[in-house]
Length: 150
Image 1 (tube, rainbow, N blue to C red):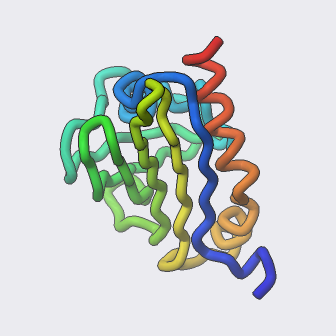
Image 2 (cartoon, helix red, strand yellow; image 1 turned 90 degrees about the vertical axis):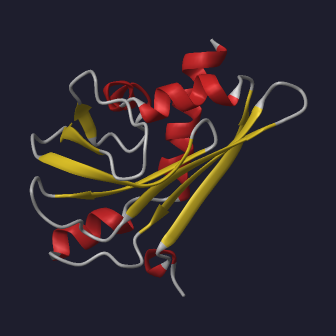
């Protein structure tokens, strides 16, 4: 199987910060463009901090499109995942997940996953999914680390 056929991509890294601090930056959509290593997130209105499965937050992408992100997993301070879709439409089929594992030294093992197993067309969306690699996921983790370790 070639790298472009891999539909579940992940990256991990230890960050020298508590899980609660990192979770606040991930669960608040207005903060997400600050650490987005995929260079796809433009802005999100303040006041959309995710608190429960079923929440939907709206993100404006760098190219101007708006996405409704449906939260499908949430364990406060530990795990969050969402599925993007059109505003007032179904989700596209991909999933973005963040998992935070507190470590004994006060740091956190951060794992970022992009799962596009169920992604459906158009072809441009499939090509964009293929361009999301462990490297771009790691870039998001590294930028998140720079915000809290700096």
